[in-house]
Length: 157
Image 1 (cartoon, helix red, strand yellow):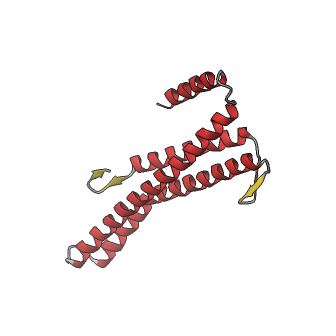
Image 2 (spheres, rainbow, N blue to C red):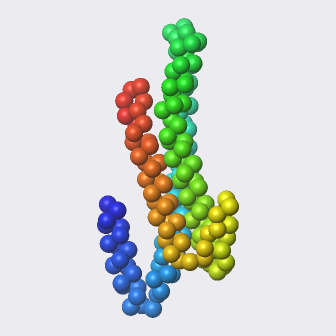
Image 3 (cartoon, rainbow, N blue to C red):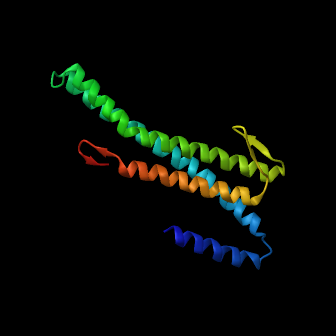
């Protein structure tokens, strides 16, 4: 799938180069679309993950209230749930950071001035924008991988 996107982008760049559109404009437009789409996707993934995470914990609490689990068993199961969900939380945090870095790189390119993000200097080059867009893609793939690897007591999500 990723290879198809790269081929499509190459074809688009070739087609637009004959229309007087600079490759940097295409990269910038694609980066803006990627940033906007990723923001929505990350928020949706985060909301869905949080809903499932809480549902698992509440199921344990319901069983404990019904006397089917001791307090120690319930606490142990909640700890297990938290541990299983840690990679998802880490991946979501990485995706949010990659999104912020891409938005910053876009702003730096548009203003022509370097910007500092979290103590790191973000250059104003289109190469920086493209690199940050790739990093965002990779970070979002990490979210997808973490969610795919997650297993609930009833099987895969």
